[in-house]
Length: 73
Image 1 (cartoon, rainbow, N blue to C red):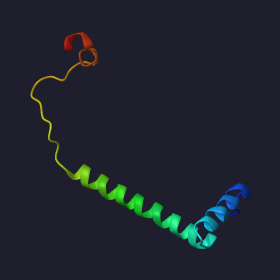
Image 2 (image 1 turned 90 degrees about the vertical axis):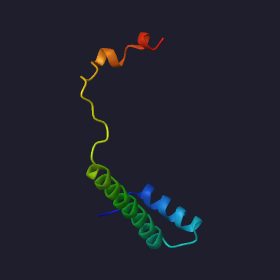
Image 3 (image 1 turned 135 degrees about the vertical axis):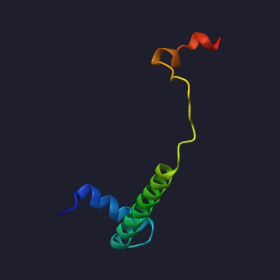
């Protein structure tokens, strides 16, 4: 796989700005992405593992009832 020239140019400039090598810059960017994705997946599993906290024995509002702003006045 080859890098598009504009992407490679950005990486070289960004690496120079951070006073690091392109290789180290890419490693850091990939690690940040991996950490963020792992954090998101853990949060999603935690959220989906919780029991629902809203329960209703009444009927749900229809779409029209939910968007009827005249009832709020």
